[in-house]
Length: 169
Figure 1 (tube, rainbow, N blue to C red):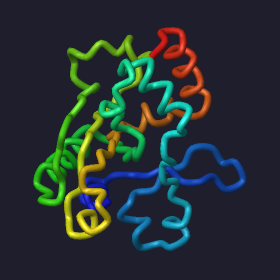
Figure 2 (cartoon, one colour; figure 1 turned 60 degrees about the vertical axis):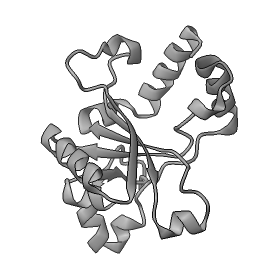
Figure 3 (cartoon, helix red, strand yellow; figure 1 turned 30 degrees about the horizontal axis):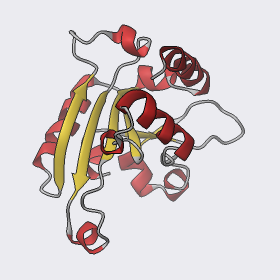
Figure 4 (tube, rainbow, N blue to C red; figure 1 turned 135 degrees about the vertical axis):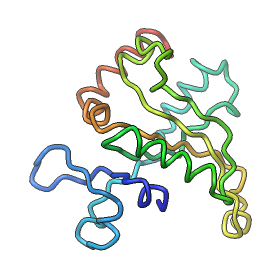
């Protein structure tokens, strides 16, 4: 979360009275308890979807399923995503395993129905994760421009799931 603070990252907020999509800068949420309490942290991938993905996309190889634990950080500018990437690579507690840059001009966005982001697969290795024996657990962090995050809303995600299911992925 410190990466989000120094790179102008935002998190989605749980809605109050169905006001639609709302985001708060992490730096602001740190200082305002009412915002911090509304930050919507991602849930773990549902077991049914994890099994489906393992079978469809990875031919049963569970070791390739690296997005069970994930979180999105939303950005207003591409330069802020670059700053976040710099912070991640300098973080001594992070073992960066993969960067999937779907913002690259050569990326074929047809594969994701136009959706783009930068996905990081990483491990957190520090005294606490070592003590809990979770230092080998792979997490996914999605760095997303706000325009794409807004399209990733319930309806947009529903369309993507239909598209993905039609491809059997």
